[in-house]
Length: 105
Image (cartoon, rainbow, N blue to C red):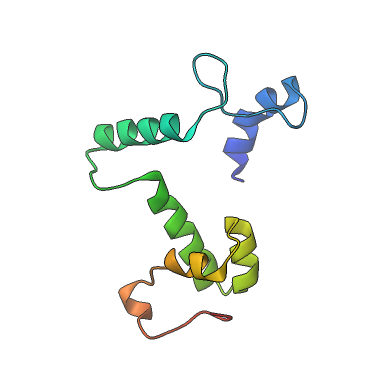
């Protein structure tokens, strides 16, 4: 976690029990998938971006972990996938790596 993010989250995390949610909506409830999707779409519109979703970030993270030579079974576990085939669907190699395979795939 970036130091700046940790600094911003520290007061929130210290207020509640360890299992408390960090991100709450305006009603004090944990964010659901719909709320996260809406917030992300709003930010993309403000930035003038289109065609992006929260899952693009997930795809990028999984691809980055594998390109950094993280073992595929570790990436699968971090992604919360039960099956390796699901993890493989998230991998999108940049054009410069076409034909190259990270360790363990």
